Length: 221
Ligand code: IMP
Image (cartoon, rainbow, N blue to C red):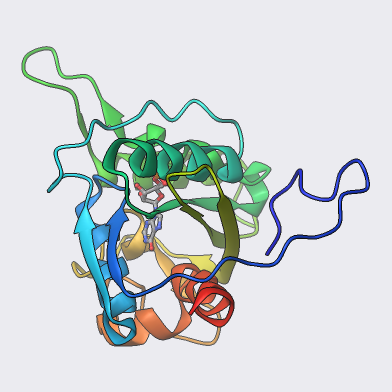
């Protein structure tokens, strides 16, 4: 897939760069994402190493789009490690909330305790989504989708992007304790279990991350 600015100014589309077997940095400090990306990379002779294992700093995600945040995470990790790096920027888009929290999905979980370090509380974040839906009345649409933007960056500054999504419905109360983030309140279309209840192997077949991965695999391997 081409990046957002490619082609502007009449440039000819560039060929997608292939990824050769070897080390690949997973440019994320989110353990749930790292676990899923490792699983998805298993069949491809890639040696995944996480940003945390390399002691890379966690960048400030100050982009206003999934593209921008995925790119800044992947480029920083590729630059600092000298290795190709894969970043995922993802989020939950709730239709009745104008696609919020969207790019701010992780921020909705930020908790600033009176004492101790700040942390993320996913049950609080899910409660916030549910509270905002409840304000809209009992007939509000509960349709939502997860988006995943993958950016694959090389140390010379080349980047490729791949986007995936999965449609679903939000349920309350949350159900299940596998998965991470907002999984317990999201039932993908055509399923009865939430992502929080589902066998991870099944989530890997249908999730937004799996969708983006299929595109990446077709293009770069
Ligand atoms: P970021 O991409 O690091 O900004 O964070 C996106 C946030 O979206 C994650 O921290 C999760 O809370 C949420 N998210 C992304 N993908 C999933 C998923 O597969 N299940 C549940 N929550 C997700």
